[in-house]
Image (cartoon, rainbow, N blue to C red):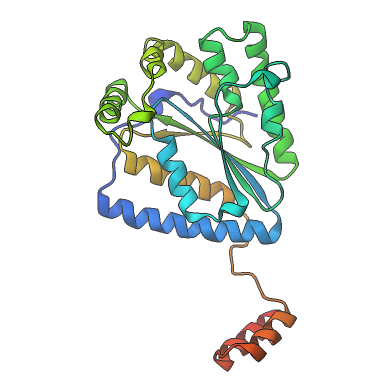
Length: 275
C-alpha cells in the first residue's frame, strides 16, 4: 500500500534552516530521546534499520555522526555501502544486506543501501533494465519481510540544490580535513543530475509504502537537516515503545542496599517498582 500522496524532490523546502541556538537545543533533546530508545530496545528486544540515501555532500554522514554520539556502539552499527566486491557481484544483490541486518535489541544504519540497485546501478547502466525494474518489487518484499519479523525501518533521503552541492565541493577542496571526501566521481555524477532526479522520484513512487515510507530531508542547511533526520528516526523508533527506565530485579536491589552507601529512600523506591 502506498501513501496517499506521491513524494517528489520538488516537495522539499530547501529554504528551511535553524539558528545555532535552536539547533543545539533540539539536537540535545533528540539525542537524549535516542538514548532512551536504545535502552528500551535492548530491554524489550526491538530492532531497527535506518536507511540513508541522498546526493553527494548532502549531509548523510553528519547526521549519522550525531546519531552515533547518542548511542552505545555495542548495539548500534553503521554500515557504509560502496561498490560490491566480486563475491557479492556473483550473488543476489540483497545478500550483503541480509548479512548486516541487526539482531534483537540492536539498531543498524546503512550509509547508502539496497536502493543503489534503482539509483546508481540504473543510472550508470550497471544492471540490465529488466533487473533494476524488478528490484522495486524485490525491495518492497524485502522490507515487508523485515517488518513482519519485527524490524522497524526509517528511510531518509537528503536533498540539496545543485548550487549548494557545488559550494560544499569547494569547501571540501579548501579544507584539508575534508579533502579526502572529494572525488572525481562527485563531479562526474553532476552530469547526470536530471537522470538522478528522475530515478529518485520513481524510487519514491514505487517504494514509499505505508509501512516503510520515505522521509525527504531538506538539507541545504545542515543544522536543519540533522535535526529533521533525528526527529524522523525517533518518531518511528519510539512509537508504541515503553521508554520509561527499566526496573531492577530484586536481587540487584538487595545487593545495592548491602554494598552501596546510598539513601534508603532510593532503595525503598526501587523496591516499590518491583512489587
